Length: 560
Image (cartoon, rainbow, N blue to C red; front, side, top):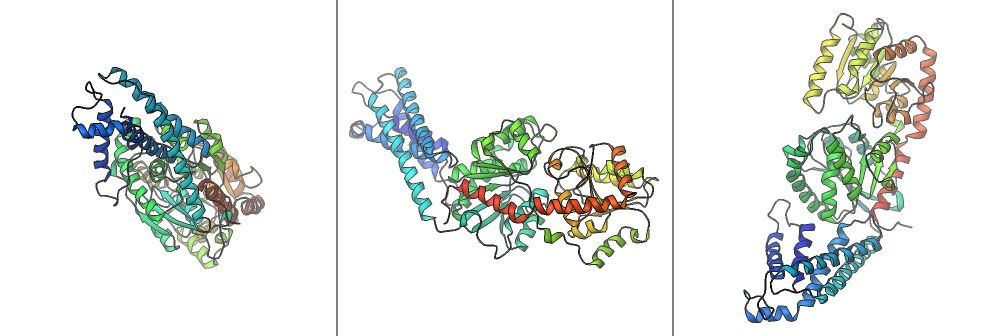
């Protein structure tokens, strides 16, 4: 008797009710109190007549008479919640089965508990009410979902993109290209137009870039504890950041329902952790774009495990930007059926040679490099120890006639900023003095790439992708890159670029010397690299494939 209160209480532990305003106290609390009272009613001892002595007689009698129907409707609510929480990425019959099995098991557990409660006795009718209620609730949820999909048959596909940073890193540049489609390109995959909003967890240049290209964007700040966690965070640090993650997820769930979004799309690691919770609370599927190598070299064991578990349990699909990224995800326990490999996409037209005066101005800025002899080698990207700028300087020191240009700045951590200072000190040494120019962050990267003779990618650890390499190839500039990770998807050694071992300044210096002394080889690598990049990394095809994954994951019917 009285399983209804217990079922509703369990239901609410699984699904916090939505609030009417993002930051107001949730109206679920009064309902939680009522459900707690119902749980007490189901489990406290009863008198000799089989009724709760603490309720007025008429109330206790009424509850006893309608016990089966109270249980039925309580488990119907639970069935709807379970159907909703199991996600759209699973087949409807599996979600129906999960609702019935879990609801019945919960009722059975309460019945077993009643053996130990004075005056209580198990009641088979409660199990039948739980079974019928769970099945009915799940069927109602399935019907409502099918009806909602039918109503949206002719409308646009609304996608809410999530990203943790306001800075312009490689993942952010990819997202910018993906969502800022050229006007008049027509519908996406499945014949549907896409309506997008990007939500960032911090403000910065990325928001400005999105809004300048006409993309709807807003900032929902992540708390300081959670925002400060790095890829190396341990379990205790992750646990302490939990309340802030749940708080942001709650606000996002409210915003998602407000937008009536069909799908969430997380673009970074923290966006995945927040997005999985928000997706469950709002009843939407989630697609995660994996830009990281989930390996011990980059992530702590706890962080890797948490990210893989979040993707396995909460994502309808995972887009990996390279075969190396996909392999690392699977090696960490990721579900193979989730993963689709789609490389970053680029608009080749953006990398055509700019006006000659722009290139000449960049060369002149390199400490008068236009008037100085020697091949110019350029390194592009944020300054960080694993990006290998120090190894580049050591290799450059072995080539007394060569010059170096480093474009980029430290973006994220104190360690990166300290590293940037050490690079400046190394460049002031006698064997490099007046041969290295630090350009800092530049928006006109294309002009700077055309201003150098060779682009060097010198990461000491495997890269998830290697965006700079493709950009250099599209610019028609030969590339030297370190072997490993996503680079192997981009560079065919000796054909579209030259590969060297990572963390080896001597091997890098030999490759740089070889290209410095062979203009014909530089021209060949540049030509082959450009043709390969235009064929394999075109933005239109990458966007089409990505939209196809989004459409399938949304569960909405395609337009015919």
